[in-house]
Image (cartoon, rainbow, N blue to C red):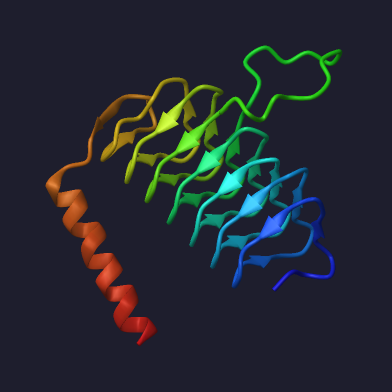
Length: 169
């Protein structure tokens, strides 16, 4: 479902993906199946896998590569230019700016700087500026410290997923 008030141009949108009002999916963007692109989000020249949620007002810019089952929170920004200047024109999207691997989550209003890789199932806390890679199964916390996700945190996440499945049934 693509809202009549969304802008989708020069882009590929997979089956079952929703693009809500005032969202923009533009300039060669590729969106997988079963995704949600929330209102006011922009996906500009980026590649997004299947079953992803891009939150309200999030910015996913050229060169970003997002895997499957990824959550990008409201207002989060995936940056693509390490040295921005007004006189520069265009961006070579063949160079990856940010890579987010399968199952990762990026909290609301987080900023991921160019060149960063967020590993599989990793999490970024809300409001964090991510300046370096986050390994798989690690958390980049509110103070920018990267630490392993504990077994207890993983068990809580599994319980939450089971509860959601029961509610959906």
